[in-house]
Amino acid sequence: MKIPSIPGFDQGAIEKYAKNAGWLMIARVGSLGIKIVVGIAVSNYLGPKEFGVYNYPLVFATFFIAAAALGLDGFVTRELLRFPEKKNELLGTAFVLKLMGGIVVLPLVYLAYHIAMGMTKLDAPFSYILVVSFTGIIQAFNIIDSYFQSKALGKFIMKVQVMGNLLSAAFKLFLIVMGMSLNWFIAALLMDVIALAIGYIYVYQKEGGSIFEWKFESPLAKFLLKNSWPMAFSAILISIYMKIDALMIQGYLGSAQQGIYSSVVQLSEAWYFIPVALVTAVFPAIMNAKRDDPERYQRRMQNMYDLMVWISVSIALFMTVASPIIYKIFYTPEYWPAAHVLTIHIWAGIFTFLGTASGQFLIAEGYTKLSMLRTGAGAIINILLNIWWIPKYGITGAAVATLIAYFSSNFMILLVPKTRQQGIMMLKSLLFITLFEKIKNRGQAAK
Image 1 (cartoon, rainbow, N blue to C red):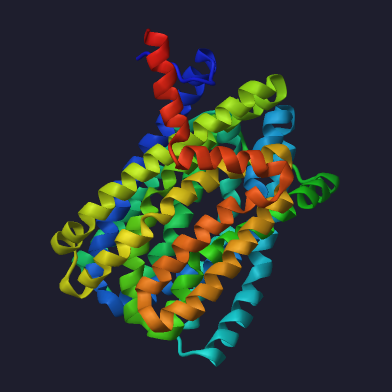
Image 2 (cartoon, helix red, strand yellow):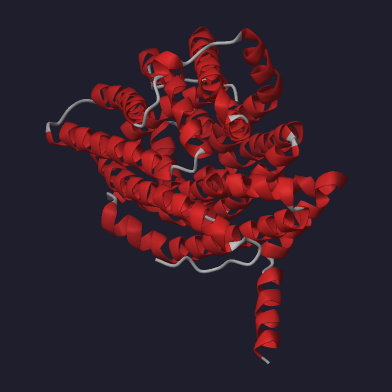
């Protein structure tokens, strides 16, 4: 099938990277459908309170899992693009670092849980938190994903993710049919990650690689840590400003409200695979343009921002109209009050889409510390607004706080001279200025 030409991208490049994006999108769309169906089934089966308890370990542990990853995945992808001959050294060193990171955070999880217990009543026992925290160790194998990304081999990522999600869905539905307790659903969260890791290892070995050829090099480890720590800290801050609302709802309103809010987040954030898949697929093309043609590099970034806005606005409009229908048809009545919260939360996705694209610009330019700072600003704004609004407005206040925090975080780059141009480019896309310019230019060309 002929891929249509896109302004700012040469046809050869877009053919290659669109094919990779296509595989990634197939994987993510399949995962989206599976996760939504199973997520709704699990939420209805457990009910709001137990569903809140089920989600709490995911939210609580996510900060530590992000820390355990050490920000290595994206940086290793970049290094593999630059030095493909160092594949075994890069993958082996990153794997050991991530494995050690996953082990080191476990006592920190224990300490943080007991501090939280002293501040508020938690319905989730520590055993649930610990089970999910082991994800930080297993995710070390996800470094294989960086190899496939660097080679634009999205079809292999697709195979692993689709099979993993099918197995996960089948197991959770089996638990529902058998009437199993919440304990089994918590165990399933760790089993999901184990299945994904096994899948990555299998496909990597099948395609000629071998994890037994990986090598750990101390000088390379120092280099990776020195250059990836801002991204690691940024990942922690991202998890804070994206997940802190759920923790604060638990503290202020209890597990039942947290469970209802989790259904909103589940539907709203399900779409966040799209910018990740698109950016992952075309990042090599953007990096090549930066090296070979700065003007083309800027055009590609502008077109990426345009694409992110068009897709995210379309999704937000659709979900705003459909949310009451979705809740009435698919959820039990206890969840129905969440419909209007979804109509607010879904609009935060626009800034998530733009942030994913601009994040690649920051990585390409080496502005990793700035990426960390803007995420930190968003986290602080989200926390302060949640403290103010959750007690007053409940989960609606949390959704509005998220929307404002996401906007503020992304457009903070307008305040920095060296990144201001990218902020202006994002605003042009957000206000549809570039869309009108393209329509005008096509009209003039037609004459």
